[in-house]
Image (cartoon, rainbow, N blue to C red; front, side, top):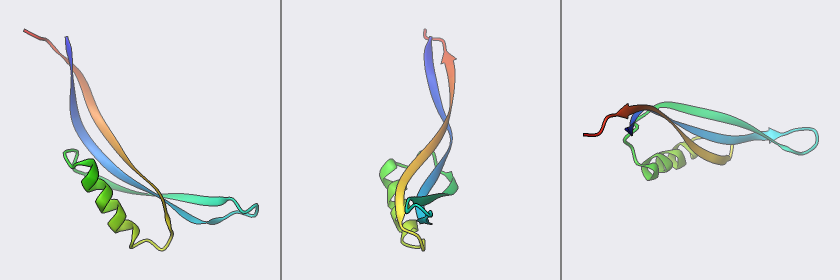
Length: 77
């Protein structure tokens, strides 16, 4: 049986540095953007992340994409 991967949803996460703690270590917060098209290319999602980061007050530290997929068995003929 072959496993079939069906994309369900995708989201974009921007990690920004919002400041530093009393020890001087950076404090990070995550900004999440849901309803990203699962079919969007990684490059397009990254380009959008770069555009969104320019609108943020805090500096961008990391970009990640979270994909949710459905895995199911498919009988082969």
